[in-house]
Image (cartoon, rainbow, N blue to C red; front, side, top):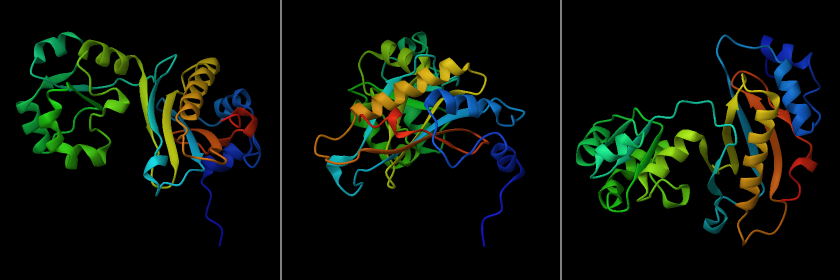
Length: 231
């Protein structure tokens, strides 16, 4: 028996044919015509990869700045022995032993954690708490750095991290529905390019299989392969 479709999904179907692919610009136009909610929905790009998640050398992850930011207020925690400098740089929370104790007790009221190289010697003990939440500082994502000011600035300005899950999918927030179509298009292009450049050197084959764009409460709109098949 086919799954029951929501009223919102049926309304979206009246706007466009959701079985076909669109150029990125067309897909953003379609998205703008979908019924809106009472809140400013997040726009997300969903990318399905052709890699093998069981192969350690085919893990795909990285970061990229969004030309127009994410539209999200990012709360930053910095693990450091110099908390005053981190707060002055724009961090929302900073410290080392005191912050680690709070996290150990279950406090996770932040979106991104940054750590200095020295602090990571201690912060590693929080891996079982921060890891599953995607909050563990990592040199590959630029969140282990001794230039705290630059690290905080980059995250606050809209740098996003992407990481492939076990099903070889990547989901990245690229803005809000209140953004202009041009802003969403440029942010999406930045993410597609960054994921394309993160292609594992050992992988041979069809790398990016499908890409779709959606809002928090909308169905996805598929992109035509010409938007990403060069990767």
